[in-house]
Amino acid sequence: MQKILYRLDINVIVGSGLLILIFFIGIFAPWIAPHDPLAVNLANRLSSPSWVYPFGTDHLGRCILSRIIYGIRISMTATFLIIIFTLVISIPIGLITGYVRGRTDHIFMRVIDSMLAIPDIVLTIAIVGVLGPGFINMIIAIIIVRWANYVRFIRSLVIKVCKEDYLLSARMSGNSPQRIMQRYILPQIFVSVLVFSALDMGKIVLAIAGLSFLGLGIQPPAPEWGAMLHDATAYFQIAPHVMIFPGLAIVFFVLACQLVSDRFRKLDSATLKEV
Image 1 (spheres, rainbow, N blue to C red):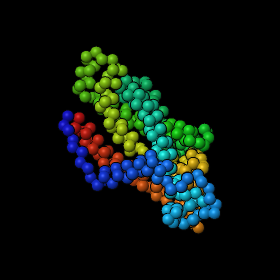
Image 2: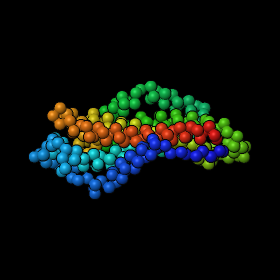
Image 3: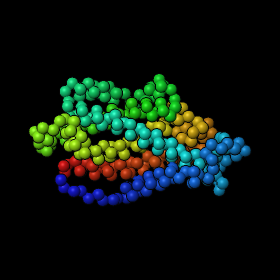
Image 4: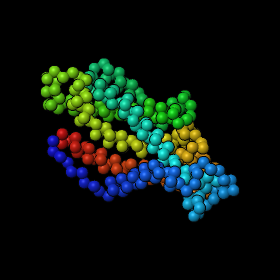
């Protein structure tokens, strides 16, 4: 297999720089945030940006900058949990449906087709509506919705790899299906699956923020970006900063994910053609 040189471009540099900066700020939030994100100070409610409060304060006098910084931790924790559990569920199913095929593949594909026929946000809201609002229920709902996309993608990769000559040799050598999937197929598709997961990070953060904005996700007083937007809607006309800064936090994070993942998606497509 011919090696491909990964050339860094401006998108990767900017996107990676933003993501590293965001992760760094989130990890060291207790030392970077200027104020307690939960501290209420009604005397300073809806204060405009200043040296003391760089992003101003919300309707309860809480520091918006501190809440955005701590919100990184919440969004990142939820996003990584969703991706990890989705991969744990979808990789075995994708391997089995793509390699074994037959009735098992037919049943799973019909279920997945039915789920993909419903818009993600509608299905997620319906599931959270049944389970109830909250951090855990939100994560469960998003996993239930997202796993179908992962399984379909992994299955397509497995079907493509199964056409390779080396896999035919592995079958003729007497390897069991489980050994073939673990030793020969999974290593070939794992990088592509990670790239797909990176592409999905922005969508997951938007889903988390959207559910929290609707009051179905992370609940107040937790400093989550979507919940901050929800609280700010009533005060946007008199204090627009309470909504602008949390919105910009979401925009910058999703933009950084797209800049990086778009480049690696192209590189991954080129890699698959060289296999």
